[in-house]
Length: 108
Length: 117
Image 1 (cartoon, rainbow over the protein chains, first blue to last red):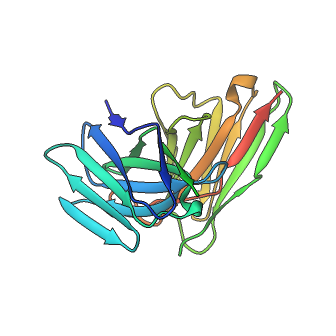
Image 2: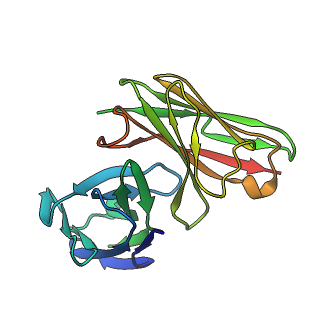
């Protein structure tokens, strides 16, 4: 089976940094995705990790440790528009299994 | 970037009727399309995977006779919810990939909000 855990909610102040953790136990692993989803909209791709280490893309970075079944998404210089749900998804063969998502609220 | 559209964006129907949702890849050929369902405050759950020209593969617990999937061309897949009931009310999202099983990022459509009265 697939078990993907991430915190339900996080709140942070504009300009701050927030780290969203994701732990997974899955029957297979071919990479880990992070998506951003605004309410009532489809997920949009943020990052993809298949090897251990840190991937940096502007204000967003993602880290993966395959031996620990652990990833995090780091959001820097938070902006109000970053208020959204962030989904961790593990790829197994061609399928994606999603976590329940972490709702991030950015306050002024 | 790759664009996936869905139609309609939202639909309200009476219990017992059927609803068809279209998913189109606008600027690439999608050999594989995926259909997900998302209930409020819950994760996206994969319902089925369809490859162009072949039968869809359904996930465990998804009734294939209730959720009919057709992937007749490389740019269009349809999901028909037959004899819809209030418990089928959900957010249905499709995604498409331009390569067959294996690699390739999934590009998501904007979703269809289904409400069954």
